[in-house]
Image 1 (cartoon, rainbow, N blue to C red):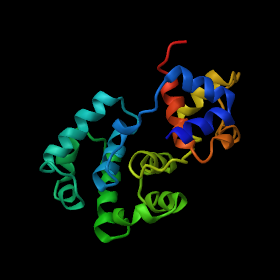
Image 2 (image 1 turned 180 degrees about the vertical axis):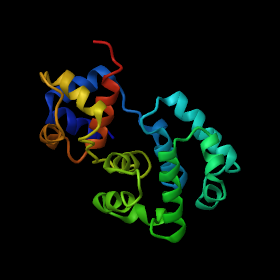
Image 3 (image 1 turned 90 degrees about the vertical axis):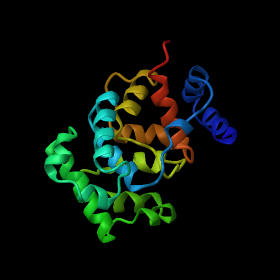
Amino acid sequence: MRRAINHLKKADPIMAQIIKQVGPFDISRAYREASFQTMVRSIAFQQLNGKAATTIFNRLLMAAGGKLTPDSVLSLSKTEMRACGLSQQKLSYIRDLAEKTESGEIDFAALPKMSDEDVIEHLTRVKGIGEWSAQMFLMFALRRENVLACGDFGVQAAIRKHYKKRKHPKPKDVARIGRAWAPYSSIACWYLWRSLDVKT
């Protein structure tokens, strides 16, 4: 990790300042298994604050018998899933994921051997899983070091703040600034997210 931090500091003076402000890198608490259950959790957390999403996810986990698998999800009725607090839309996304995983169209065991691009293509076959969700899976489940989440609101907000942009940057702006961070873009994103919590 020292190599990654040194690279980011040398490649980008502004990132060097962010690293100094945020302090030691620690993404390990955010890591999750590269599993079906992790992807269900990601869907459940979309566009919700952490506390509400955690409550809904834990209810679904309990309803499914303590472990989320394609079988345990599909054994629940739509009414039972709605009772957990899931919206009709998210319910349909999770069931689509379960059906595609059960049929073998989505293969979580194969993902670690795939390129980043192939993982994104594979996961976005599922309704409700877009590029951002697939990128978060790459970063936090597959633990890939060079994922640049150009469309992430937090990354964009941090770039606007630290790189003194008058307007909220577009994904192409993030990609241009982020070229210097490769091959450690995931680490740079983590620092950008954390920097929003640091009072300066």
